[in-house]
Length: 385
Ligand SMILES: *Cc1c(COP(=O)(O)O)cnc(C)c1O
Image (cartoon, rainbow, N blue to C red; front, side, top):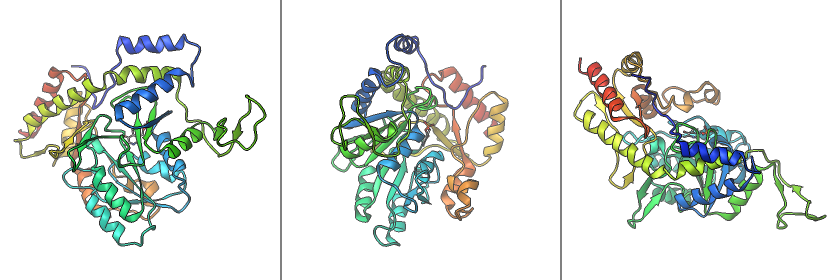
């Protein structure tokens, strides 16, 4: 059996065809495919505006810039995420505070968040970055109520959850990134994520002012928009009005993204099928804890995470059988970089305990039934012997 990774992109002949076609066109970067991808992706998320950018980390940094995050601003996030969720704000000098996760869903515990916010005067914290970890959509309606009470902005890191949704208290479907409750939502198009463009990312929002700032910071802080110009010398004229970055994506990557997006719904259905098969195989085994999913949630299953007592043993045994499970994540507050700000072992017990036992099993649409059966059998062989 060939190696089975925990995640893998799916590139079709049609994907390759559209990339080649774009390479032969007049535009390699900043061409029509980017605008088309932005329109199609905002439509997919049901958001008003979308900016496609060079990667998910750049997207997070752009959120911090658009929200005017300044040195010393305090923001709160979850420790069980990829480091970029915190780093994007650290780039602007923010002080990062971590709040523990919920034992069942592994996402930021909103009750603990509220408790933490209540201990300080309003305005002490500026914003919250929540993560739809593994593809589990955060209840943004509940979060918005809390955030409004304490005057916080919300960035939703939905890198794991394009296509995921929750049902709100009005029985309305709230798809991740629709901008109804969050100020800005961030996605990544890294190959292990749902939609692959090589490197790539997106920011969706319903806030025109924030959207315009993101577009400005994406291209050096340069504008030709008469609304922003101080002077105007002719059609060539532009001004740099902020210190921006080059966070653009190429047109051929955007073409790939459009093609991938057209298969996103199939992909998420397949991910849910795979999850169901794992659940059926493992839910009766005491030594394996399968993911908990609330009734009002449609999980996007970027990851399928189990918890086991002997994680290292299983991980190594799977590796010996050519199955490359992964661990998501080493808690961010225990990274040496963040420890220098005073974070230490014991600060966030639920996240730390989760980290000791979590294991992400192979989960991607092109995982075959045969491969999945082999993964299941190998885990059972190890656990039940
Ligand atoms: C992948 C990922 C990112 C960063 O995305 P890149 O495109 O790799 O920069 C940020 N946050 C989370 C939760 C991710 O999984």
